[in-house]
Length: 111
Image 1 (cartoon, one colour):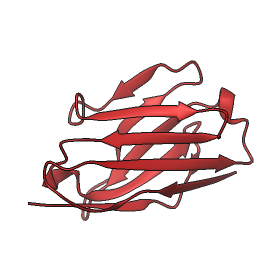
Image 2: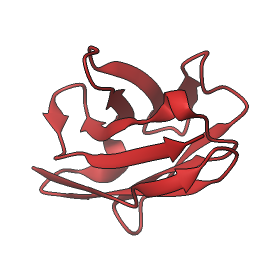
Image 3: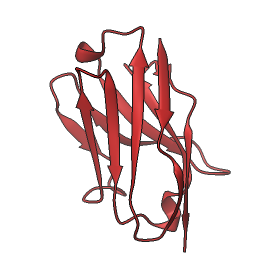
């Protein structure tokens, strides 16, 4: 299983970014997927999840600002991040089935 995260970058506070996670080697359409993040000096934390049925869940800190989605035809999961804050700065990781991890993509939000 390989999970390739992309789309990170540097953005000013209030800006937007869209992360992508391309999955291979997994039956993507039946896999529960999620995004996590890890800021410097902190533990990795849950950001958002989407089940194979399309049910979504979010951390309180990102509710109303982030949106998770998936395209089963492309074996790809997305995270649309709006109204970004400096505290959103972290390495963002995609996850499959609570088991497989991607390599992470850096998101930096400047104030």
